[in-house]
Image (cartoon, rainbow, N blue to C red):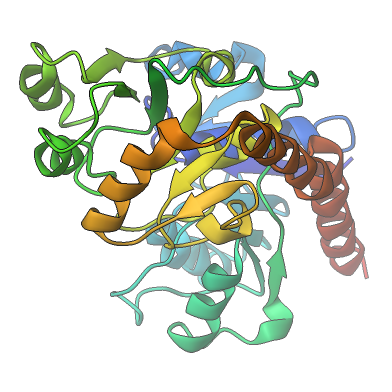
Length: 334
């Protein structure tokens, strides 16, 4: 059985990258000898990732990956694996997961022959900026487990709750959202920020006495919280293909977002989502939510769920990754 290692150096935190790594690992572990590899000891692995000790390997031996497939989730390590192959003849087949649209350090980004992009804009970024041949790129959407199949509850016009699930940082713009929207929203609109990150304390201080903006901290069951809220929102500066938006489709929750990264491959304006790009458009959209009729809301919920079933199931995701790895394995034994 061929060895496959999923490598990431930041297994002490939980972001979309780590979630995708785990989804890939779970998809292939019955067909391949699969392990998860990090740079730190097992005690440093975030407990919320639920990685068992027997499937984790700390990378100490530089030749650990000899004659194996490595699924790599960080561009900064591409050159290292190229050196391992060219200088030390390690015969490693690298599958690089291009999680987001990236720029800079093009000369140091030694792209391998097998690259997975998660959105059309990611593919465009690879071809136009990094000059990757199209035949080296495989588009595979992210997925989430299907844990809710019943319809989303109808919304409550007396207090519309909007969930903003994301790591608290500049790119996700939570602080900027509070500062731009404070004093401009109807009183029956409430935004709940779920997540932690480098700006968590600053956000908490900013909203601690404001009932309209609430910082929940880390939440270990985002899909359940989505079921209890009326909308899911992201208004980031950049994205890859957000796991939280896919979770919104799985739970049948309507989306409010901007057109960055792969957002509009999940959120379709006028169908399951409202897509806006300017602050004044966002404020107007939020203030109009209480006037939305129930039939329209229910239709958005059903369309959101349909989009999930067509594009983002674990079964579809698993099939695509196994097909890719099987092709690579067949090439290695020729």
